[in-house]
Image 1: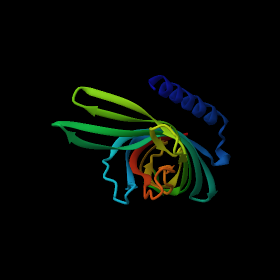
Image 2: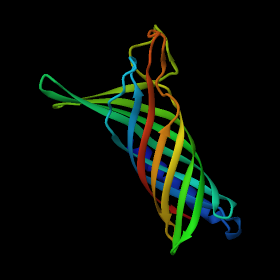
Image 3: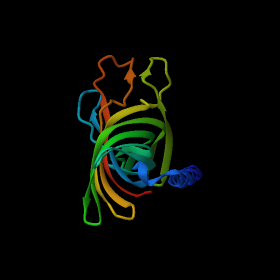
Image 4: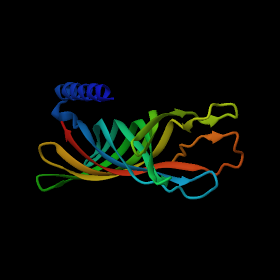
Amino acid sequence: MKKQLFSLIMILMLSATLTNAQRTENTGMSFGILGGINFQNLNGDDMFGDKLDYDILMGFHLGVNVQIPIVPEFYFQPGLLFSTKGAKTSFTLLGVEITNKIKLNYIELPLNFVYKGKLGNGYVFLGFGPYLGYAVSGKLITEGGSLSNDTKIKFKNTVEVGDSIDIYFKALDVGANIFAGYEMSFGVFLQLNTQFGLLKINPEYKAIPDDKSSVKNTGFGISIGYRL
C-alpha cells in the first residue's frame, strides 16, 4: 500500500506540473491538488430492519480537480480522488474487547459546482454536487487482545445461494458532496467536506428473501490543497 500511495503522489505531482505549464491566464481554468482526513461511517438498517450501530472510522483522501469557469464567480469542478471509507464496531467477548473495522477503498469522481467570491486577500468558496465512487479493494480487520486478522471483502451486486461465505459489498457508490472553505491569494486552500451516500452498497442476498438491509456511506472531512 505504501508503494502504491507513493506512486500516486508522484503521478499527481507530475500531472500538476504539466497542467501548470500548459495553463494560460486568459483561459480562467485552474488545477488543484488536495488531500486530507476522512471521518466515515456506515448508516442504515440491518437485515431485520434495525438501525446499524457503527462508530466513525478515520481514513484519508488524495486527489486532483480542475476548476472551469461558467459565469463570473461560478465554476464547474470535476475531480478524481482516492478515498478510504468504512466504519468500526466494538464488543466484549469473554472479557476481551474485540474491534471490527470495515475498510473500503474507493476511486471517486466528484462533479461539483462552486461559488467563489473575493474576501480579503483571498476567496471564500461554497460547493456542492454529485459523486460517483467505485470500490477497488476492502477488508475487515478484527483485533482483540494480541490477535489480529484481516479478511478480504468481495464486491458483488447479488449474492447467490451457492456463493462462498464471505463479506460482500457493492462496488458502485453514488452520493452528494457539500463543502466550504477559503483559498488564499497564493493558491493554498482549506475546506470542510460532507458526503451523503445515496445508493445502498449492501448486495442483494438471494438466500435471505426478506432482507431489510440498507447500508450507505456517510461522512465528513478536512482537506488542504494548492490551486495552480
